[in-house]
Length: 382
Image (tube, rainbow, N blue to C red; front, side, top):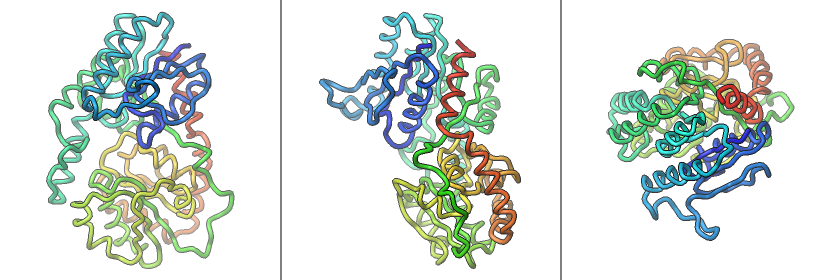
């Protein structure tokens, strides 16, 4: 099988660039070859991956801002579509948002299945949820934010949803948001993300019994991620009386002002952005992530691999089962989240049981396993 993978940003950079890198690296182990079109490459890939950098001249990267962000994406899309006309042995095309329309249209003309990555919920759903949450906190829409309503962006997204043969959706929760918006279920393909086993792992020993009960939050500190719910539940659960809550992530200034009364509690530790959170995860008991809207948060895979019990909302797209290997609440249900933190901070036996089950389940959630599953999806649809 020959896969053409199109990613209109830097592969291997933080965020979605890391997701794309791991997908390409791991799926390459299960297919004959991959042709990767990206704007730049920042990490080494296997020998059966041919790389074409669309925003590079004589080996030097051209920043998106030189052409303009939107023009850069359109240029990348056009380059890939033209290349597809010349290649006569591509079996599957895998596109990412903002560079899909021309490539998928050309793939359809050639009779090649075209998958479109959907890293989040339906964009209209995301806009509505974020607007509602910011309003509830007395915050104005964040200008230029990816989750602030943009009619032009929504129109483009919906066109991309239509032109692709299949949408790769990373969680049941995200999938439902597409069904609710009228997207045919047969067009939606559930897949998943993963974690890097070289970085995220359990240190092999039981948690230090002398340390206080420790919760951790890792993510951008903005209303969408629900940190305000986590802090409220932490304080109301009583866990703050004897435990630590480690908060890692860049803080949105307006949001921080809203959170100031909660952040002032001495049990809460602010670490800011942390480039390598694995060590802090291994030193924590639970990972708290009450997102209001997500596709499937990578940090939930990573925290689980480090031995944290997940205490998360359904919207995180986490791969855990409520009461079996984690605790799950409905988005915005602070009362349920409070009870979950109260239970785990006071019941050591339940914490140990969930931790053991979580570690066992995480063995099948690596990027390597995700790559195998994605290659199987390609094969089934080609």
